[in-house]
Length: 218
Ligand SMILES: NC(=O)c1ccc[n+]([C@@H]2O[C@H](COP(=O)([O-])OP(=O)(O)OC[C@H]3O[C@@H](n4cnc5c(N)ncnc54)[C@H](OP(=O)(O)O)[C@@H]3O)[C@@H](O)[C@H]2O)c1
Image (cartoon, rainbow, N blue to C red; front, top):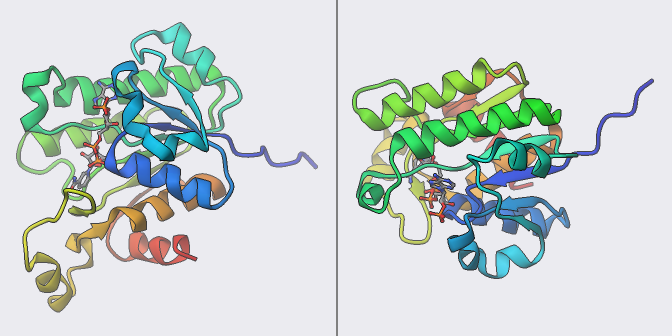
């Protein structure tokens, strides 16, 4: 019988709020991941970066990215942007959609066998952000690789707070799908999914997402 491949995880968007929480969760589990950062952002990794391998390849460099992904089993795509950052050059087209396509193309060439996409609840709904999330999902679904999509609601952590009272209302009404999620909870669930290569072929939101969160926190 063939031995299952030992997991080697590439974290795209490692300098972001969720990406850094993921690095911390992995370090706490004594797991070394390959963290991707843009050259100008490496310092943002802070202490979270010290326990991991760091790569700064331009995601638009197909050959370079494919080489960087050698030996990687799993891509966890945490890249995304927001409207207030458009002035600095990032857009939904370049960050949310473009980098997903670049990662999927290079991942397939490099033999990656699992792509985990951090998307959003409401993907495909009204507005450019949710439309972009649906396009990123489609890229992953059609990648030819096994995939898992996360569709969390509002993130809580660092400078993220959500709308005051929103969490209480969602809990009161039993709206699990819209319940705000702490980045540590999300990071634990992403890491568990990446480590176990499961569940596959599902977009996780609501109850199944919260079940994974509970397991991810051990
Ligand atoms: N915030 C929420 O409430 C919420 C809710 C549901 C889902 N989400 C989604 O969850 C994901 C992670 O959110 P977050 O709040 O953790 O993100 P974040 O803190 O805003 O970080 C975004 C990450 O994406 C990277 N990035 C952006 N454009 C890039 C590009 N063109 N090339 C390479 N890297 C690029 C950033 O790198 P730099 O450091 O170099 O800028 C950073 O590492 C996003 O897709 C977001 O849409 C967010």
